[in-house]
Image (cartoon, rainbow, N blue to C red; front, side, top):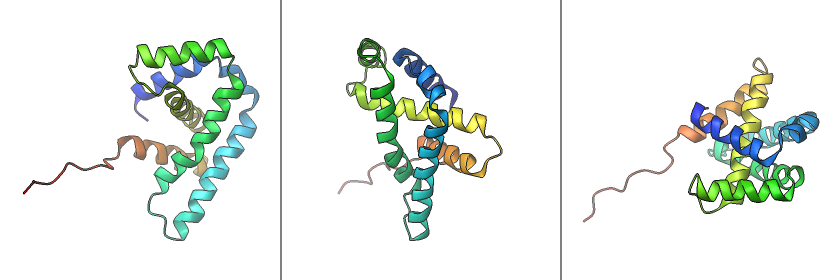
Length: 141
C-alpha cells in the first residue's frame, strides 16, 4: 500500500492508543480478517466481480469494533478531532475505522509475507486503494 496512506493509518492507530490492544488480540484479529477473505473467495467463486470492494466492506465492521472497544474515550475523541482538523474530513469515526483497517492489513501482511492468504488480502486492499472504480463522465449532449 502507498507509504503515505500507511503513515496516516499508523498515526491514527497511535492516536487511538490501539497498538497494545491490537498486539494483545493479534491472533483473533488475524482469524477474523482471514474469515472475511474466505467469505469473499467463496462469493468470487460464484460470480462476485467486486471481491476487493466486498472484502473492504466485510472488514470495516471489524475495524470499527476494534476502534470502539480498544480505544479509551478521550483518545477516541482526540483522534476524531485530528481527523476533522488535520485531515479535514467530516466523518471522523468512519475514517478512523478505515485507517485502522489499513493498519491491520499492512501489519498482518508484514508479519506473514509468505502466507498466500495475507498476500491476497494485502493485494485486495492495495488494488482497491489504487483502482479507478469511478470513471470520468462522457461527453454531454
